[in-house]
Amino acid sequence: MEEPTPIGSSPEAPNPPEVPPPTPPPPPASNTAKLAAGALLALVVVAGLYYINRFWIAPAVRAQSKGNADHPLAPAFSLTDITGKPLALSDFHGKVVVLDFWATWCGPCQLEIPGFIDLQKRYAAQGFTMIGISMDDSSDPVVEYYKDHQMNYPVALGNDRLAELFGVNQGYPTTFVIGRDSRIYAKHVGAYDPAVFETEIKELLAANESGAPKDFQQAGQLFPDEKVELGNPAAIDSEVPGIDLTKLTADQKEAYKKILSGKQCNCGCNRNLLECRRVDRSCGTSRKLAQDELDAMLKVKAPDATAK
Image (cartoon, rainbow, N blue to C red; front, side, top):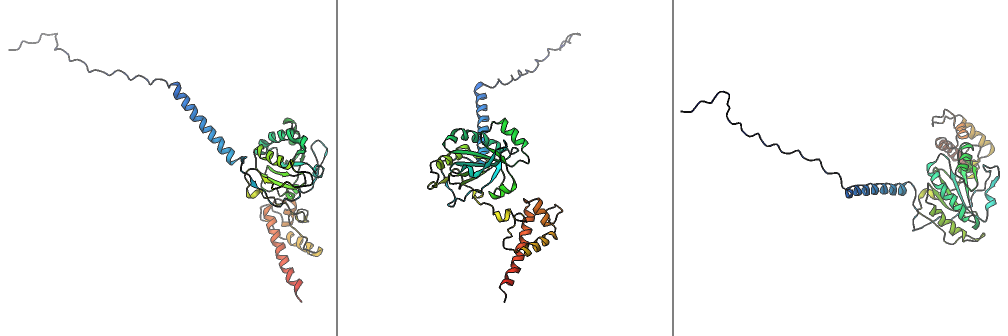
């Protein structure tokens, strides 16, 4: 017979379950891990810069591409530079000239200018000069930029006519390399490494004033839009800007202008074709429509001229 449990006493309590100790926090990253992460980040940055330079700034490469076999004479021009001095391209005959169409608001243009300043310093005494043609709307920002960056070569304010004469229609910067014989040997659209220009400058400086360099090769990569195609002065200076009217008689020109005056341009300018051409010579819509009207007039004219 079991003895009764005394009042106030209790059976032996079981042992509480074991609680695992808390997991310690992970140790701080070692210096090696930090260095590895930094190296990876550096690789990403370098790769990004590589692709920016590869696809935004055309690279200077050792393998050269041949330039155009025909090197046209650079169109003559006379301007006044931003210091008030006359600037005529003919004054530089016998020198190698790099002619840069640029603007102060153009980021890639600004990237090239320090290199141009350096080229002017190093090669001016050998018969080289830089010339900058700013396509800004006014001279004020150009003068300020010129002073702030201590540009050491002549700069003048350009205009649409001059850009059209040189066939500049792909944006800025567009840069031409001109030999001692005043012929254009290379055209570069977009920002380039200074080494590209230096290679071409040195090759052209080696030629004498009256002769052309033998087997000139344009440095860097040669792109289709870098073919030298100058504007047609007859079309640029036409009564209808951009349209060559030399095949029309005086009476036919008047009739043609009357046709354009009676047709609306559909570029959204709310002007007739003649007004649009005269106000905005860069408008591709009015240029095409005006050229179509001229072609139609010439097709009508041709049978009449041969009919008997």
